[in-house]
Image (tube, rainbow, N blue to C red; front, top):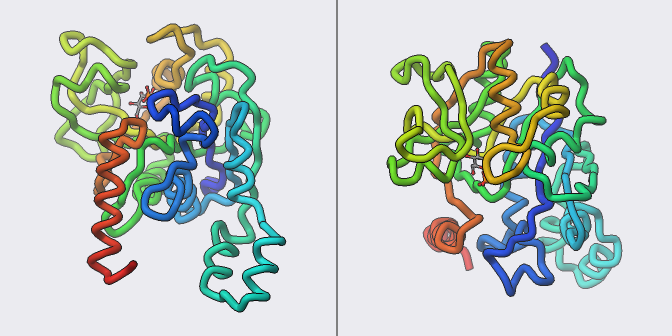
Length: 281
Ligand code: G1P
């Protein structure tokens, strides 16, 4: 089995919940302490071994590409002024062996459509990761994607991150039907996008981390609009489930929903307090 190398980051969303800040700054570039939200997901993917990062972007998202690019003017200036610590930070945003590729999603047709925009770069025989940067995860001991990749390497299956939430919240997420929820990893019997509470098969919900068989790209080509009138990744996964085993991993770590103001604030408090405890300024 080929090692996991490619990761897709859907980052075309408008970020309307964070207006007016997101009028000129992509929501993925809002900072949690001193790093943009997207940086956390990228570091998690690199830690898990990914070296090809595919960003599905939209209009006004150039700041993301600029952030991951080298900045010779800034580096020269820092070097001249002998600001070695700052220089190191700027030079080490991503390791030099990692490549970033940007694809524009012309129309906001949904997460399934965004992932499918990466199809030309994913071979049907290889597994790839999808990370939704809004879900910021502080993994205990190791990153969530690394934890999932260990399960993937052991089993050869597609793997999805899961979290158990209160029944009041299930309608906001993709929800899985577990074959046996007491057996970890949880084998999926089904998956459904944003069901009503009374229709939800369980309260095990999908967190924005996936390791998927490249075959899903072909399935997404014909996936019809689903929940919210959008082409849903969940519906593509449901199709994939008809032909192969998919495992759910309840990762160890804390997730913050940086797509909401409360979650974003909580993430800042969590990482900010961590910094203060370490005596940082
Ligand atoms: C997306 C997925 C959903 C998943 C969620 C995790 O929804 O469609 O299945 O549970 O991310 O954050 P969104 O939050 O983009 O509406």
